[in-house]
Image (cartoon, rainbow, N blue to C red):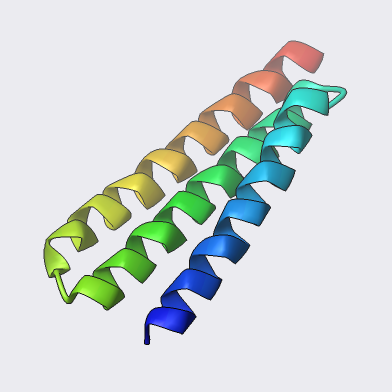
Length: 86
């Protein structure tokens, strides 16, 4: 079980580094929003791996809250971005 958790952590860390590059090098706002949304999904996956490893289910509401904030933030930015383009 520990090997799986370490492997998942390493893969999530690599994904976070690649996504951070996408956020920093994104040519426009929508690319950066997609990168931030992906980074939030990676954070939720990291919390889920930690919860599965430790058996602690108290972080599950935090995962749901992160999903809600990520969705609302992405929807708000895309809505205002479309309105600014007109």
